[in-house]
Image (cartoon, rainbow, N blue to C red; front, side, top):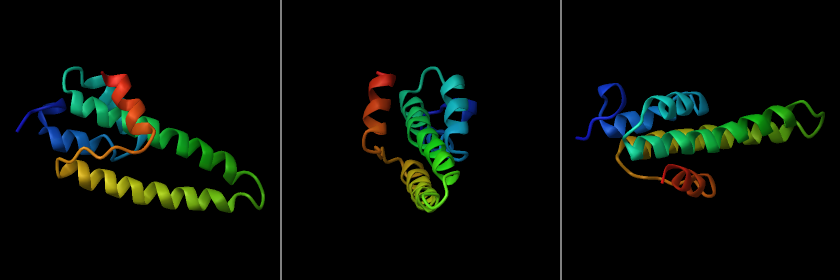
Length: 107
């Protein structure tokens, strides 16, 4: 197995990029300098979960529309689980739009 950040296997480090959503994405993006797979997942984590967190927070403050915030959180939890599982299994799962943007940023 290829080693990455903190001496972790590549698939473990890549999955860890999603553990605390965009927070761990930022940490791994700052720490990992060489492994493109880990950097991709870190960037995808940031580009996926940071905007969703902000949108959900803002919508949650608006009466009646705030229920949409709950739906966004539900989507985020499902996406979070899918990304961690697929990445841990060694699969490169690309989130539409965010995955393409992450790929461009890393290359």
